[in-house]
Structures are given as C-alpha cells and as structure tokens.
Length: 316
Image 1: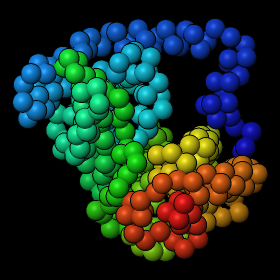
Image 2: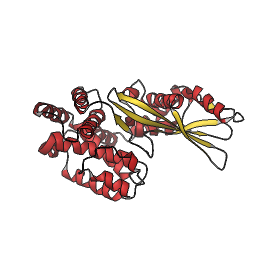
Image 3: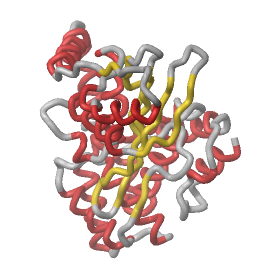
Image 4: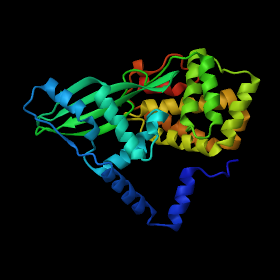
C-alpha cells in the first residue's frame, strides 16, 4: 500500500519532467489574486481609533495582503487550518481571503499594538464552526500603516495560541460517528475526521468504538493511504517549525496520528507509513519542541499520558 503515491510525490515527479511547472503555477496564482478584484483598504488615520476599527470592519471584503505572492503563499501554507466549509469555492485563494475578511468583520478585536513608526497591528479572533460538534479559533492580523493603508499580515490558527485552538461540544460517541461519516466520504479532507477522532479521544479518555467501528476506521484510512501520508508530511513540516509559533500544530498533528495508529490501525500502521518516518518525526519534535515558547493553557484537557510531545513543548 505504501507504493501508492501521495499528491506531493506526484507533484515532484511532474516537476522533474516539466521544470517550468512551478513558474506557471505561480503565474496562475498571481493572476487569480488579481481577478478577485480586492481594491485594498485605506482609512482616514485622523479618525479616532474606534471609528477606524469600524471602518476597517466595513471594508473587510477589500482587505488583501501587501503583495499577491504573499496571498498565494499564505493560502498554500495555511488554508488547511480553516473549517472545511470555508475552504470550498472556485478559488482556494478567494476562499482563504473571504474567511479572513469574515474574521475581521465579525471577530473580536483582542489586541492592538503601536509601533515606534506609528503603525498599528490589530488582531481579530473568531470561533468558527467546523461541524456542530467542533469549532476552531481563527486569528487575522492586520497592519494599519500611519497613512491609513491597511493590509493582512497573517491568517489562520492563533499564533501563538493562549488556549486550545479547537473546541469540542459533542459527546465522544457523536464525534466518532461524524468521523466515520467523513472518512467514508472521500470529498472531505482527511484532516477533519482525524481531528474529530482526536476530539473523541479527549472526551472519552480511552480509545473509542466497538470492533465494527474500529474496522471501518481502519479500512477507510487504508483506502485513503496517500492522504494519510500527506498528513504525516504536514506533521513533519510543523515539527520543523515547532520552535516558533507552530508548536500547537506540531503537537496536534502528532497526537491525531498517534490516536489513529494505536486506537484503530495497530500493526497495519507500518504497511501504510514507514517506521523511520515516525522515528524521524519524533526526533525532530524532541529537539524543536524543547525550544518552543508554549503556553500550558493552550494544551487541551485529556491529553493521554503517552503523548509526551505536549509536555516537552510546555517545559521548553
């Protein structure tokens, strides 16, 4: 089963036979940003701050990053942090920017800091619905220049988080059932059912599901093995950036994987992923999480004792 190629592996193979592929894709992404027709936001900086904030909210649909290439790069890096419903649309970049605009327009302004040059950095936060059983915190950072020109600088999960990014309101059984539905539906990205299975584990404290349900999870993940390995590759990306603000993402992805490995796949795990990849991931986590500036309050309640990476992060 490990001979099935991930999307990343297929993309690398195409690149070898088509060296101009990256440039064409970049040109396509930049053209897509231009087609979105966002005009940018310039506010009257002479106005009192509360009026500036309301004006920014009103103009949120025109907010953009300071360059099209930044919008394209941020979308590729962080779109998977959004709820599945907010990733959908004809344009991935358009969906990402629309979600950011919603957060600025509807979210809570949680911080405002002024630089020595007079620029203000504003952070808006919104709790977005993933399913009726789970939600995710999203954070939009906006830089307001002294002349009133305002643009996005970052969007996605709070970075760094000061409380758990994900909240689960359903019972463990409800989360498991939704995860089963998502896994059977190949159109739902793999990260959501893995998140829901993790939420079920946090809520129950033990691996959940009867023999039939566990078999269904194992069979559906095996059928989507390429996506599982893509998820593992993303975990590795987060682990390499764990000394910075990505410690939460690194721990979340590693726990979601471990929960699937120990609760549902068992020995089948190593027919889907290489042992060395897991060992390399854990080695990188040990090294990088020890240098993370992690907030203990951001660790979710109910983390199993064996998931040592959370402890390393907060002890760093």
